Length: 56
Image (cartoon, rainbow, N blue to C red; front, top):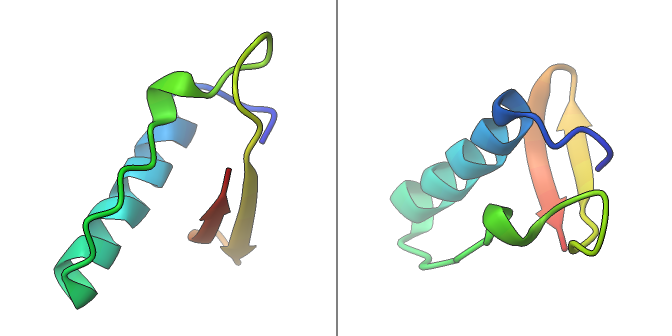
């Protein structure tokens, strides 16, 4: 993940909510800790324009 814009982090939050609503998981992605400098790294998986996976 190299784009830490509000739009990109909103997509990650949306995926987190989708998972919670689908299977009751209680994941805390922690997008606030992501960042280009001194932040956590993240890898995203997309199917077309849809974010389908997140690994941090």
